[in-house]
Amino acid sequence: MKMFTALSAGLLFGLGLIISGMADPGKVLGFLDLFGAWDPSLAFVMLGAIAVASGAFALAARRSVSLLGLPMKLPTSRQIDRPLVFGSILFGIGWGLAGICPGPGIVLLGAGFTQGAIFVAAMLAGMGVFEILQRRSAPT
Amino acid sequence: MSILIDWTHFTPLAALCGGALIGIAAAVLVFFNGRLAGISGVLGGLLSAAWRPLAAETSWRAAFMVGLLLAPWLFRVFTPLPVPHIEATTPLLIVAGLLVGIGTRYASGCTSGHGVCGLSRVSPRSLVATPLFMAAGFFTTYLVRHLLVGYLFGGGSP
Image 1 (tube, helix red, strand yellow):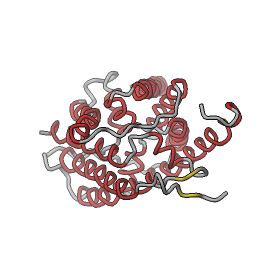
Image 2 (spheres, chains in turn red, yellow):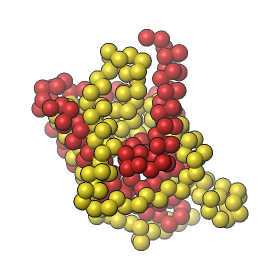
Image 3 (cartoon, chains in turn cyan, red):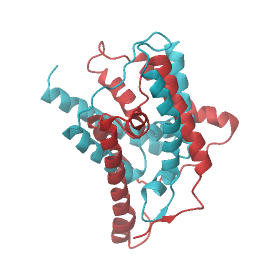
C-alpha cells in the first residue's frame, strides 16, 4: 500500500509539472529571464502548490503517524548553515543554465528525451560527488 | 531596467491548476507515507542507499520515482505531450546537471523540497534557500541570454 501511495504521488507530481508547463525548460527559462520577456507562470505554479500543500502540512503536523501507520519523517532542522547557502547558489546557477531542476529532469527522461537523460545522468554524477565528499569529510 | 510581462506565453490558469496538482501530490505523500515530496531528496536518498543499503528506505522512494517517470506516459494516454523547448546544448546540460546535483544535495532540497514543501511549512531554511536559488537562477539566465549569447555568438542564438 505504501508503494501504491508513493507511486500515485509521483504520478500526480509529474502530471502537475506537465500541465503547469514546468516540464518545458523553455517555459522555466521564460520565468528566470526576468529582464527579457518575463513569463510569471512559475510563480503561479508555486502559488497553487503552496495553497494546497500548506493546508496539508498544517494538518499533517498534528499527526504522529501517517494514515498508513508509518512514522512521520519530516525535516526538523532550522539551522542556516554554509552548505545550505552555497548549495542553493550552486543549484540556482545550474537551474539558470538549462532551465531544468530535478523534477522536470526526471519527467523529461521518462518522456524519452535524450536531453533529459543527459541532464539526469550528470545530476546523478553530481549527487555522487556529494556522497563521496560527505564520506571523506565525515566517515560513518 | 523594467520588467515586461510576456503575455503570449503567460498561462496563469494552467499554472495554478498544475501547481495545485503538485500540492495534492505532496499532500498524498505526507498523509499516507509521512514523507516530504522533495525530488532531489528522494533521488539522493536512493543514490545514498548504494553506500549504506540497510539505512535507507528505498522502496517508497523508488515507487515515487517510477511514478514521476511514468507521468508523461499517463498524460499521453489522454492527449499528446506538449513539445518541450530545450535550448541547452549537451555540454551545457552536463554542467547544469552537475551543478544541480551537487547544489541540491548540499542545500538539502530543490524547487520542490524547499520551494513548495518547505515554504508551505514556513521552514526557516527554505525561506533562505528559495530566494537564494531563485536569485542565482535569475542572474545566471541573464548572464547566459543577454550577455554571453551576444558576446559568443554575435547576437544569434546557439
